[in-house]
Length: 179
Length: 143
Image (cartoon, rainbow over all chains, first blue to last red; front, side, top):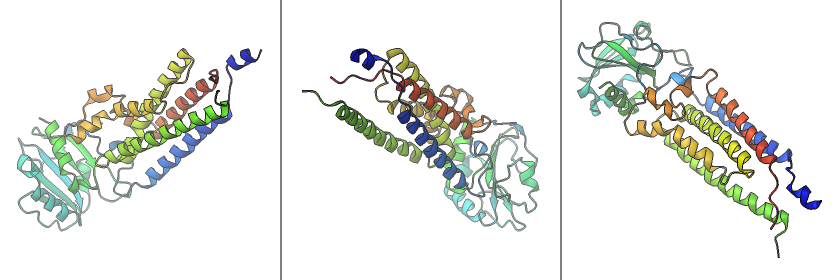
């Protein structure tokens, strides 16, 4: 009788429920904390921020004329007025500008200069950013990120990236994927 | 001379706790490895996807063998590693491609409606399935 009782499957609701509730509360809190840690320059939908692959969503689409250099891959950076110099310094130090054409679109009326690394364009009203289909960040201001245009003039990649000046190696990874 | 059943259970619980610590440290390591790739979002997606699949497999294995799976925290960790493998490649300079969905939907999993909340719900459902299966298994008899 006792042996039969020991072998019978037993249901222990307290412990499984405790494990499940602990996981639900713990990971739920972590998710909430992670969500609140996103900054005003991040994408409202994190899935579209730095997806890491070409031709996401409705891409490729033709790039607006003007900035892309015909026959060359062009990276068009979008920065705030106070972020241009940091990006320009990073471009001077990186090898990216040797491999591709670069342009910097500054969300300001006075674009300044970027040495020999890139053309600089003022975009105070956000028209250029809109023409490139750049997504608006959570904070609602101008975008900080970049678009990659291939040698045929098609936009193959675009993303917000508030720390793009520190991540030019990643831009190089995306550019290399075009080959 | 045999150990009392409560002592056996305490020993088993201690082993599980030690594995919890090992698994937690390993997962923190994976999170840190995402520093350059928006850890907040990507870690959760691949953790939930990998763990959900692992928990379903664990539930099937436990049902068939009539025993809880050994090292239950290692299975989700290994599945998480598989799910995030393309991110290791990305760190090494290889961009993502569509075919990398073979790694537990590495590309597509980010774009499901509801995003990480959907995968969180899947994870909780898979976890519920596994703990219910384990709870219904016969208790191990003391030696």
